[in-house]
Image (cartoon, rainbow, N blue to C red):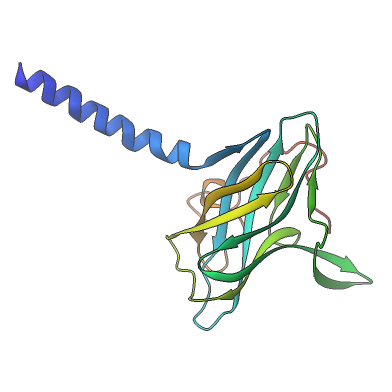
Length: 178
């Protein structure tokens, strides 16, 4: 009988290995579901990094991402990149970023993002960077950014083995402005 118990324990252990990544990729806070939280590795001496994620509001009222904090950074702000008269500009969203009910907002390179400022050390590919985001209604939400390569354009789960980005269907009103 000890071999059956050992086999069961080993099977449970293997199942937990495969279940953990799926659970780690999704964070629920009130009516919000946050997925695909990631960042890019930074070169030594870099003082800023971008944080990217997808926020879905499954509720009936809007919520607003208003800021955040991280041990690795002096400040965490919500920013927007946009084209103005043919020039790419970046600015902080002083009033935060609204996530309307029933909508999904994707923070991605070239659009909305979380700015980690005054970095205390470089971000290294493969690490998990703990960040706390602050929402008007959902409050403080802890999550980790999966650090991808320096030139990554999407989280690893959207990339194919040859480095190409998979195109996924996103609901209209994705929140990206260019």
